[in-house]
Image 1 (cartoon, rainbow, N blue to C red):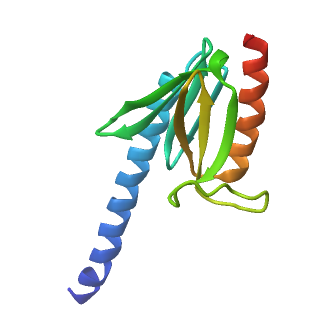
Image 2 (cartoon, rainbow, N blue to C red):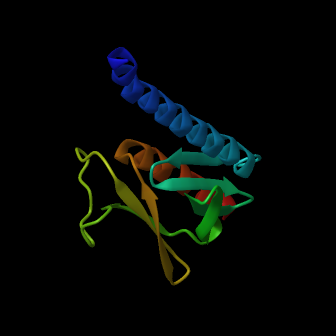
Length: 136
């Protein structure tokens, strides 16, 4: 009897890990459907983003679906800044890592796009600026 009680917590941990794995697989499957046909797409802990038909849109995964958070027309893009995610208007240095956001500026508006990884955000800056030049 005591051996069965020792295995019970391990069984509960296994069931919990299996459920979390299923949720992550579902999130990735929904992302693939959402990002289908996109020229550029990302999925990370801060949300999902895609560039399709000259419009950059981003969403957050909530309640089993992607909830839209914002969009930006790339042909209006004038400037992209890399900023810290939670500390106001502090720009990130080249050595900085971790969570950040891209500030998209253009056509008298600005939007913030969150990223979980600064390296990926830097690559997106290059891609977005190249695509905005192509749109002109």
